[in-house]
Amino acid sequence: MNKADILSHVDHTLLAATASWTDIQAVCQEAIDNQTASVCLPPSYVARVHDTYGNRINICTVIGFPLGYSVTDAKVAEVKAADAEGANEFDMVVNLGDVKNGAFDRVAAEIAAVKRAAGSKIVKVIVETCYLTEAEKIALCRCVTEGGADYIKTSTGFGTAGATVADVALFRAHIGPHVKIKAAGGIRSRQDMVDYLNQGCDRLGTSSAVKILAGEESGGY
Image (cartoon, rainbow, N blue to C red; front, side, top):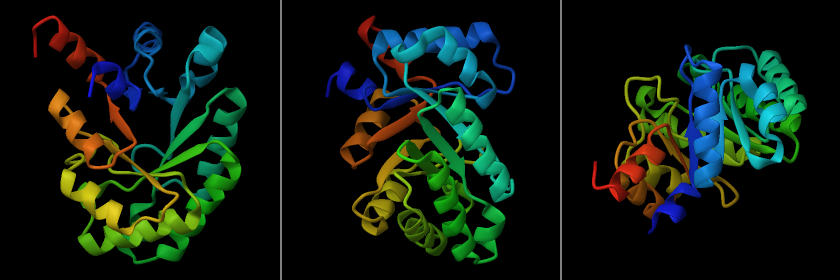
């Protein structure tokens, strides 16, 4: 698997609260230069990125991020606003309170509401695996499938841990046939990226892929 193959699956990510416009521009240019799957950025930068780069970049943003406990109407409003400003993909965080209360019908209904707001655009559902039991992970696979989302995503990168190969295998066994997998959080080497892609992930969320692979080419990392 060569560099271009790997990067074509990467959502090149910058979600730091302190990210400046200069930082955002740097990430966007890296995404363009390396032909990553998308650039994943805070909602507050979507319009400016779209106005600056237009169709040269596929814009992904986050919804209910990073804690997920916004009410459904707020998440739907976030999607509609980002859609109008030029986002093409939406990574939403589930309500973990609902998960812990066993209210999986509410979780599925919220996912469905967000997907309706997104229309034909891609919705990825972040389930934050580090806080979940195996039974909860399996239940969330059903919620994502029933809610009509396009992807199940492991992590925000802001939790206590990130993606694992074991969780990806569990997802693969329990999601519906139309649902893809995005691994995110703790992806820090070329081997990590290759392993997740070989395990069936379609997308990788990472801020470091471009740097890692550039370092590899120059003899570093």
